[in-house]
Length: 493
Image 1 (cartoon, rainbow, N blue to C red):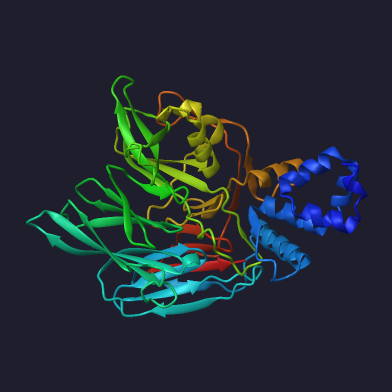
Image 2: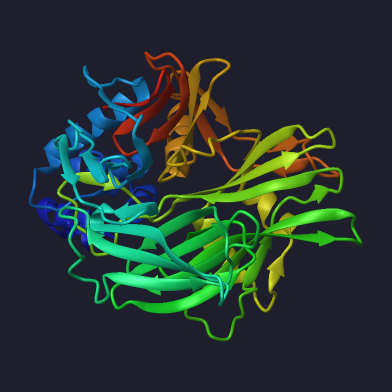
């Protein structure tokens, strides 16, 4: 260490700037001279603030480190103080039957005019302008859609035809440019066809994209759902799965699915998360499972839903000076239960992506891991009823929900470093509850469900009436208001 300190100060700064924040902190703890040197470094302060904020640095050729630090500090202060821009954006939803919110873009589909209205949400702190454009002449009876702005990708799903003789339903998937509405230039087959062995009048869909992979859960009203996955670049189908409730991508090769099985011996129902590698030919569709908190037979599990946010493509380079880090992401598993009186009860399990990946790597030869071996120390379960319709409430390590009884929103932040930083500095944020200790939830099991993942919960209000749900992005909170017609209000920082 002494040999290193013989270098000129300017060179030492260059060396230390190449280290990640955790390595820098270790250096400051083992050497007083390095601690003294680094505490005056703007680059180190910026790296620290990035880590505490759950952000990552943008391209180096936009603005200086000093400007980045000031903008990031202003961005975080605006979130902490809920200091919104003077003017909000407002969009009526009377003819907008489908919508999506991803990558800082709001997409609304007008069923009557058969067009998309697309909105890039603004950010004064990150230098993103408000921009709107439209895609016209959608000549397909759309069932659902999704998008990935970082890949300039718009995916449209439609029921194409029904063959009663063969008892199959044919679906058409279109891969378009989000900017132009034309066939996507990187899609070798911009139109895909897939068959389902089910004939039903009513279908719903879950559509997810991660890097070059596309997966769609086709869910009929009166039969089991089927999940199909493709490489959308080359059009090749990878796998088809059945009998699952919900799904999401964990990484570009790993999919997590929700499943339920009954244990007659223990007289309980066991929900589980099933993790499958799309390219692991040695693993059948049962995959590797992580058990979730079980239910006694007095409860009926109405739905087991997985909600998370898919990150930008891995080689995407934002023009913003900083963006949300997606090295770790929040996975929310929603329990929707019916008690013996038929009353709906809702709970949510919050799980960091890093926990699921670590469990997968540590499983050894076991195909399943009981809840008590992984869940209590690594998750947090809370009685929360997230919206079933306005589902874009997860961003990074945060999740938002609106409390209609108290007319306020709650922002759940599981950014570990941010919580530790607040507590170490004894600088708790305003209107924020810190849930650090383990809690035992007397819910639906035979025993209280103990969980302990730290979280800070920020409460706030919006200058609106009749708010039904809120969604969150990097720079905005989007409120769905049930007035005469549903309106979407966008509040940006």
